[in-house]
Length: 74
Image 1 (cartoon, rainbow, N blue to C red):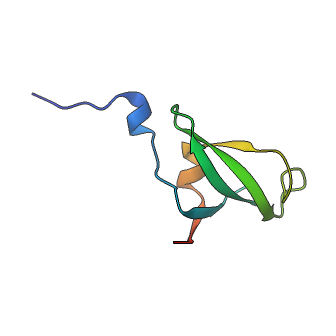
Image 2: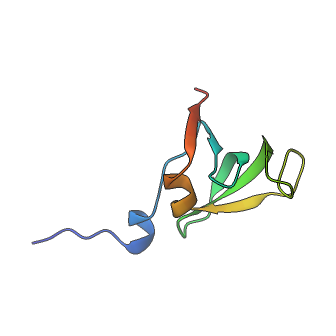
């Protein structure tokens, strides 16, 4: 018998306690898992013109997370 995880579970990445620097230049803090492989995140800086510190929350997806630099904050 094979055990198979649902698609959303396969796409889950645990990023709690991290600051992420995305390939797009956005530095953000993941806040809440949305259940579809994405996280709601708050931009806190970076080089992206539109999504820097103080901008609206963004959604980040598993592909962004996999390619991001993780900064552990404890």
